[in-house]
Figure 1 (cartoon, rainbow, N blue to C red):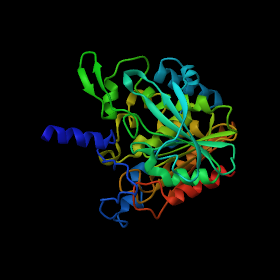
Figure 2: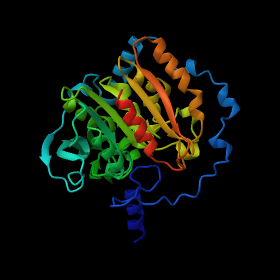
Figure 3: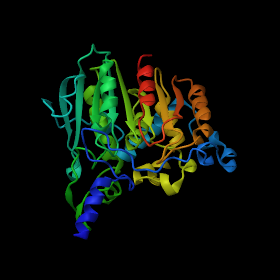
Length: 366
C-alpha cells in the first residue's frame, strides 16, 4: 500500500520538482501555502555580491549572426539536426467536440493536434478558434506542469479578444501520457518525472520531448495567422523562454514565473527539474543569452512576467540585475526587438495573475 501511495504522489507531482499539481476541477483549488512574509528582505533587496556581477560579460552574443549561429547550435543539440525544428509536423489533426474546451462560451471550434514522439511520449494540443472576430493572431499557451485547462480564465480572456489559442502541456503532464517504457540497460520504467527523460536513448537531447511538440504546432500554424505568439506559466514559462529563443517566428513571447538566470537562483527552492539547469544545454546558451535571442528580431518582443511576492520561486527583485543589460544588448545588435520585465507586486502566489493577462492582452494589441 505504501508503495502505491508513493507512486500516486509522484504522478500528482508530474515532474514539478515536488510541488503537487491539483487535479482538474470545476473550481480553482485554494493554495495551502502559508502567508507570504512580505517584510522578508529576500522579496525587496538583492544580495550585495550579486550587484558586482558583470552581466554583459556573461552574454557572448556580439552580432545578429551570433544569434543565428546560437540558434543552429541549440537546434542541433536538441534534435541532432539543426533543420529538424522546421520539419516537425503533427501526426494527426481533427475537429473535435471537447467536453471541456468546446463548453467554453468563447470557443467556436476545437482542432485536436497530436504529435507522436519516441518512447510513447505523445503530445496533445487543442487549437481553439474564437467566436469573437479574429485578430489574425494565435497564442500558443503552455500550461507547464499543471493541466493547461487550469488556466482557462486566461485562455478565455485571449479568446474573448479574438485571438486563437493552442493549449498544450509539458511532457508527462496534463493530458499527455505517462507511459511505461522499456529502457535498454535499465528495464521497464514508468515515466512520471521529467528527470527520467534523461534515461531515454535516441538522437538529440531530452529537450526534444519538451520543444518538439511546440515546433510541430508552430509549423502547423505558420501561414494561417499574421502573428504567432507564445505564453506560458511556470514550466510553461520556461518552455516559452527557450522555444522563442530558438524560433524567430514567435514574434511575441510572455513567459510568466518561468525562469531566472542560474547565478541568481535560490537553489534550495528554484532548481526545478533538469530541463531548467541541464549543464550541457546551458553551456551552449545561458539564460541571459536565451532572453536576448527570444527578444531579437524585427517586430519581436519578450515580456518576462514575475510576481515579486511569489510563494514558490523566482520571487523578489533579482530581475533588476539583468533586465536593462539584456534589453541594451538587444538594441545594440540593431536587428530590432525589445526585452522587458513586468512585475506583479500584489499577487502573493506562484500564479499567472489577472494583471499578467492584462499585460499580455495590451501587448498583443500593439
